[in-house]
Length: 303
Image 1 (cartoon, rainbow, N blue to C red):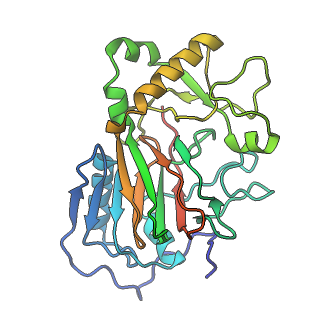
Image 2 (spheres, rainbow, N blue to C red):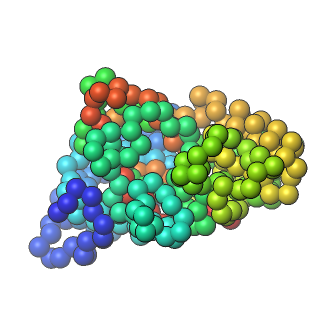
Image 3 (cartoon, helix red, strand yellow):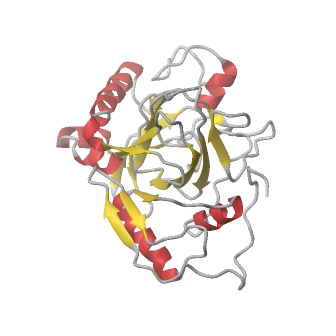
């Protein structure tokens, strides 16, 4: 099978053996979110009890980390799709790895090698596909090669970010809608990056408003649905008021106490909630190979 898969494999047949009986263990990272899972071989079909236990742990911890995994693309897709359908954005809304016709592969190569995406530079804290009409609800990232000098990703707990706001700010922002503009369209059109839309210029992309304070469609909990650096606009607020509000919220959300830092090792799979977390990547050595594979899951529009 090719390195980058483009379709979901057939359901497992009777020739597949299930994970042998093991003691499933969920160990919190000790940070503001995240837990390490042991007792699961992601290359093999999972039994219903394990699937349901993992879903429950995921809702509680927001990210789950599976160590020492070794999967083919087919096995990786089978594992991921126990937890949702593959995310497929509208062809007219470009995302990472979209081809000229707007099609995206099921597995995206996140790598600084030929055919890979995102390079080796810093990526500001963000949620994937925030600018689409129906954002992805979750994602998996599987590490194959990691630079010897280290590779890290930080995830934030956006439930806690919202909970820690003072009551006056909560009252101010509940009910507001936020437009997150498509950064891939910005790159195509060129021009200076801005963190809040300049009202003197036309929008760079279609607008798909989502709640600034989202209610998670599966847990019912509230979270701050705001990236750290993407171009945004608050619906119905004048430019100055909106820009000041967003700057204040971003400063609050950037506090280190909300982030868990994951140090990657080959064989890691990290499964994260793409609504109630942001993820941030520091720059790493561009002369060292970094090869990971991402799968995004559909079904994530907050309300």
